[in-house]
Length: 241
Image (cartoon, rainbow, N blue to C red):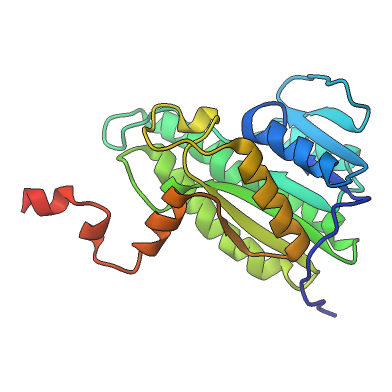
């Protein structure tokens, strides 16, 4: 029987954060612990231990099926999963090797899908559970690179996950960020957000069962323009005309 989605308590919970060793991922781990999580699996591609016994380092490569399956076996009691891993390779759509664009898709899209598939049955075992997918404002705004393609695809995948997992009581939250201390936004010249503030908003959304978080002024502005003519976001089209 389907269960209506509700918020997920953080206090007393066990969580997993992909790419949880630095930047926003580290801030998310710290915020979950501050809110009372008893254990947080912080994943990275190589083991990195921190001085807090509540943080469990876990090697995870989201592009590898076996690695994701092993992580799900190791973290089989989580009620909160945060998909934060991402990569940006600076791939011009019409010039970059297609393999580079595929690499971005492999991490940003298929990596998120792999983790969601592996952990969905684990999340279903809880009366309420949460999945947070960290997405860029560039899900909605193209700069001519493969990165934006992968983020737009991950946005669509997140919407599908939200619909498919709601019946088991898992709320899927899309956390949209502009520019901050994340490798994937290096070179994008827009105002930087504080990862700690974004992490606080993510935690609030988990507890409240919020479907979408627009974490800064940049994301709120871009989202507000999506129903307008395409030239609202791409003024250079008017100049060309």
